[in-house]
Image 1 (cartoon, rainbow, N blue to C red):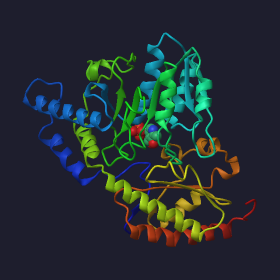
Image 2: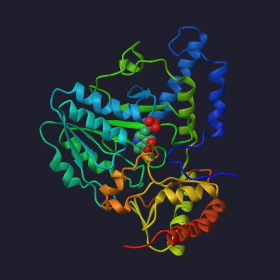
Image 3: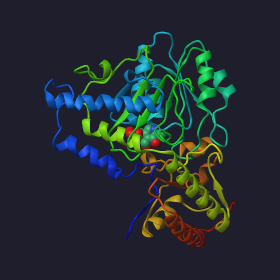
Image 4: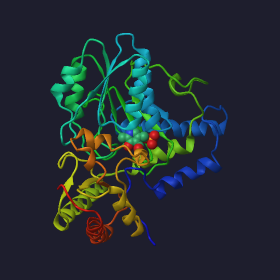
Length: 382
Ligand SMILES: Cc1ncc(COP(=O)(O)O)c(C=O)c1O
């Protein structure tokens, strides 16, 4: 059975163009980018080209980008590295809708004695600017707010939130793993001091990411060794991975974004047309081009995902990293869902490779699945 992949928020297919450029750096140009000989110099040259491509894509300078193993590492380094480097204070602000790697880093810092504020969001998932302003105090060193939400797709207004942080002299970080190349990131315009990026959500390889750190910011490394990446992240660089990452950035384009928006809207309209008692979660307007998150009241999201899988469609109930957890989604709870409705969600996340034909098929099978599950489940409380 041909698989239809609609779980691109979890990870994406490596683009053939990306795989092609990476291949050479496994088998021919396999030098360590720190080595002085020809193979090392060749690898280093490509790494610096990749650094520039990524820096340019967010209006940063190449020496403000360090390569990491992905979003989790970049987010851990940001929270812990800024906390340890800062003598000014011990208070950090995050939101209740962050990815687990931010939330769990914050919880760990709490155990070390730092004070953390977990900001509420509204029913669309937006941070209120006044709430942010009120939460900042003289001890605040960092504000970390996710850009495009990995579950419900809401895109925060970084420019406005960043302006508040700048005015109050507090560092501003965003986790842009889901939004990178899908909507604008401009570190100057959006007043950003640190930005987390990763590769495997944009048709690059897994295990690679980057962190933008504005020049002059004091951050304490927690991985010590040979002093790679401006002494901030020691360890031999993942040369093929980094080159693949930059190729993925190169091939991302506006036409793909428009294509995903078209398919996203077709799915939303089709579902509302054919299925009752459904809610679209997250903002309708400020939304990731590839994200759709529905609640089908009265039934289990896991059942829907299971039946879709049987029909050849890969989807998820929410974030991939918490899909093994029985805890209801912290994001859905934060946007106001009661616990009993938190397990009724379906997340469909698209990519440049999805087609209208695939959407037509989804819109044929999904209503049948929902109807079947509602027949099995005593359907109350809607
Ligand atoms: C918003 C967000 N942040 C961080 C991560 C973690 O990134 P990685 O898988 O590269 O460690 C993810 C991936 O699921 C994500 O969606």
